[in-house]
Image (cartoon, one colour):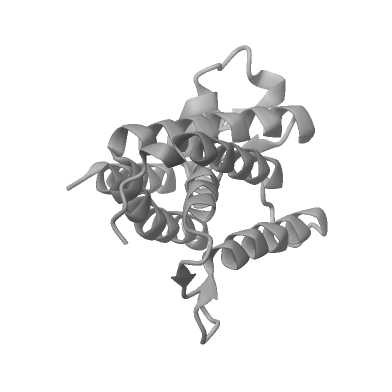
Length: 190
């Protein structure tokens, strides 16, 4: 099992733990700007905490995207560069969230890091075709990623879904910037 598998298993184990004690886990490990200086570890730990049952869509979307996009990115750049993109993208997403979001809101989830992976892959393989449920046709990766980002942002701003679009934006931009830098190191596998 590679690094992508370990990240998915870690997220799933913590998802089960959060489901048992949601208030405790989210308050201790979720990122909240207003309490950041009392809990600085949350800038990293929130990337491993997802909403508990019955909201399984959050972790499912993140882990499925991480599996497919992350596996390709590891083959292109190797585990070391993948991890740099994943964790630094998540951190940049969290920092942007802290600057732009309501300081009393709490951010949880791997979405910033996952958007960093998606952004990097989009820059490296923009025309790669992907299937996005429920659409019946494959889309170019850049359309799927940018379209997904815009859709989630609209849902967040319209208060339809509680989404940290700021973390998505930070991760996406970092991933694209990192891929621009790392593209010379990519392996030509397809």
